[in-house]
Image 1 (cartoon, helix red, strand yellow):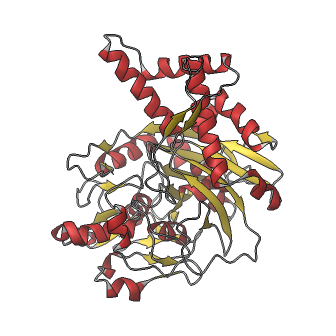
Image 2 (tube, helix red, strand yellow; image 1 turned 30 degrees about the vertical axis):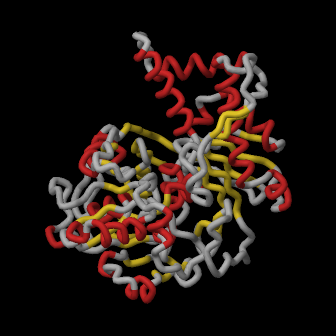
Image 3 (spheres, one colour; image 1 turned 60 degrees about the horizontal axis):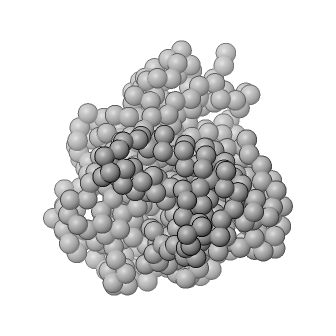
Length: 453
């Protein structure tokens, strides 16, 4: 009899679920649905929040579309999701899919913590800096600006941690180092929160999750879930980035380039690598905990496919103002077609409209403008090249070569649908690029649990 691992990824814009057959490690079913859960910032604080109830509804619809005869033979469930963000809930009323005992999800894109506020926070005992959108920074913001809000909740975690808590009926949050490190104020060498530092700043320590190793189980399903039997083991939630890398990193000499909503370029550090003792806020490369005691070197850019999406939104907005209407999808296809006919451009686009974590107040620029390079093809080509050049400025090709990287594994939805981006990858990094091993967090989290069977 075939058995399956269910892998679920709760992404920034969509939810994906896959069924992996245990023996062959092959995908036998897959579903993806957009969450459409973004909430407008009505308070003028650069908030980026999502409707938690809508995310949960989308998750259940997504699982319900998978073949029930296979769901009945699921032997493990793995969950990954967007890191850094924070969700608050009240465990005293129990974990129940139908109860609204939770807050909005404040996502990794949240911008309410400005430079002045971040500089007022205590210095963490960690090699990772704290930025806006990080869970602990967000809690500090609520402590200062809306302290009454926190009194309604007993637990905090990422959205993926909350789903695991729901599935297992947990009265607390269990969090892996992958997600804990993304919150800030967590030491990855000792796998401990900076409890003394946080306590000294008045931080509500009861909100901090209990840390468990990446890859361990969090518990077992409390009830039947879409045909998956009660008592099915559930892994502690993992970071979407680490799972995406796991799904396609097959050799030590590979680097993984992923361009989806944002963009990341990473490679595995040697087994004996130890991160710095303190944060390196000006460094464009961070070291993310992977599995066991290993780390990934990561250039994590905030500017990826979202920049292209913003460009499309700008163009469609202009067209509507001119009395014309064209769908985002049609416009995207046309601008890529124009750029493919424009093989090069001397227009320079610096696409950092969202800043970067190491340079949060950097803005985008367009330079070297002339009457000869302002066509849609020129601008689109330059924008795609700019996204790659920005990544290369964060992690130069020379650094990859020095680390022994011999090829790049390209992945992500933006790369998959954009031939211009793929062309520019080769030009900017001058390394062989392979596709077909698409980085997929849902597949990665399923493979991790499958490899443990």
